[in-house]
Image (cartoon, rainbow, N blue to C red; front, side, top):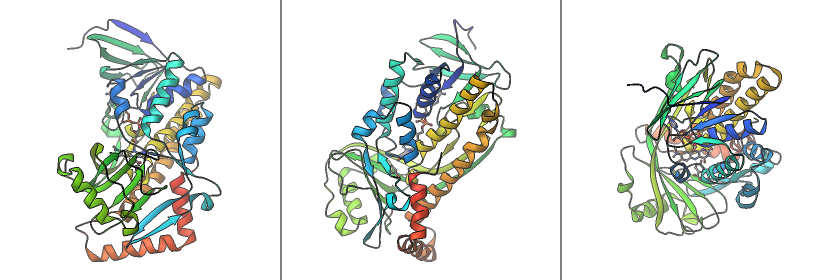
Length: 398
Ligand code: RFL
Ligand code: PHB
C-alpha cells in the first residue's frame, strides 16, 4: 500500500545511487551550480566497505584532478607506466607510457575514490539520503518526473527536472524503461573470480595478468604493502571453498616461477567471489531519466574498465545537463545515448577480448588453446598489437 508522502523535497537532478557514478555526478553538477539530491539504499559505511576497482585510466585521473579531487590521488595513487602479461612460464611487459605517447594508469582503490567524493560532497553541504528504501521513479516521460521513497519509516517525495539512475546493475532505474523499447545484450562467462586482499607487499611494482592451463591469475595491489590477487574460479565456488592455504598454493602454481618465488603469503583480510559477465542495455535514457555506470552496463573486471566507464558516462551526462541549464542547449541530452554507448561498446569489446585471451575455457578444446597461445605470442611480439592493447588499457579518449 502506498503511503501519502509526509515530506516533499525539490531538486534539479534526483540521483538514485550513491556509488562512484552518483557521487561524481552530484559533485560535477554542484561545481556548475546545478542542484541535486542523492538517494542511496545502503549506509555510508557499507558503500565505503565495498572492495572493488583498482585501476584508473589516464582520462579518469585527469577528470578527477580537474574536478578538484586530485590531492590524495596524486599523493597515494601509484603511477604505472607498464603492465605485464605472463604465459608459458614467461613474463612480457607492455610499456603503456612509451606506446601511448605518455599516458599511464594509476592504481588507486575505488574505496579511496568514494571516500574522496564523500568528503567533497560533505564540504559542499550536499543533500544525501542514506538507507532510502523502495526508491521509485515516476512520470519519467513527462517534464515533471519525481521519486518516491521511504526513510526512517516515513514516505517521501522528491520532485525534480531530471532523474539520474546511478544505482548499479541491480538498481531500479533500468527496469523503468519499458521492455518494449529496451534491448539487453548479455554474455555470461563460464567462470568467476575469487579475490583476496592481503597485508603483504605485491610481487611486482606493476600488475601481472597471467594465463595458465589451470586458470587466470591477476596480481594487483592497493599500496606498496597491500596486495590484491584474483584467481579464475568455478562459477559455483564460494569463498569457503578457498581457504587461504588453497588460494596461495593455487596462485603459485599458476604463475611463472620467477613471479611465484616473489609472492609473499599472509592472512587474507578480505575474500570475495564474483561471476564474470558482459552486459549492455540500450538505450541509456528514457524521457527525463538517464542511466550512468553499472546501471546501464557491466564489463568483466579483466580490462579494469567498470569504474572508468561510470566516470565517462557521468562526464557526458553532467556536460549535457550543465549545457542545458547554462544555455538551454538540449543537444548534449539528445546525444548522451550515442556518445556514451559508443565508448561503452569499445570498452565492452576490449574487456571481452582480454577475458577470452587470458582465461582457461575448460570446454573449448585444444584448438582454442593453440589459437589463444598464438594470439598472446603475437600480442607481445608485435609493436602494432601492443600499441592497440596499450591505447585501450590506458583508456580511449573521453
Ligand atoms: P555501484 O558502485 O554499484 O553503485 C551503485 C549504488 O546504487 C545503490 N543502489 C540503490 N540506491 C537506491 N535505491 C536503489 N534501488 C538502489 N539500487 C542500488 C547501491 O547501493 C550502490 O551504492 O555502481 P557505479 O556507481 O555505477 O560504479 C561502478 C563501479 O562500482 C564498477 O563498475 C567497478 O567496481 C567495476 N570494477 C572495476 N572497474 C574499474 O574501472 N577498474 C577495476 O580495476 C575494476 N575492478 C570491478 C573490479 C568490479 C569488481 N566486482 C566486485 C564486480 C574488480 C571487481 C572484483
Ligand atoms: C584490482 O586491483 O582490483 C583490479 C586491477 C585490475 C583489474 C581488475 C581489478 O583488471
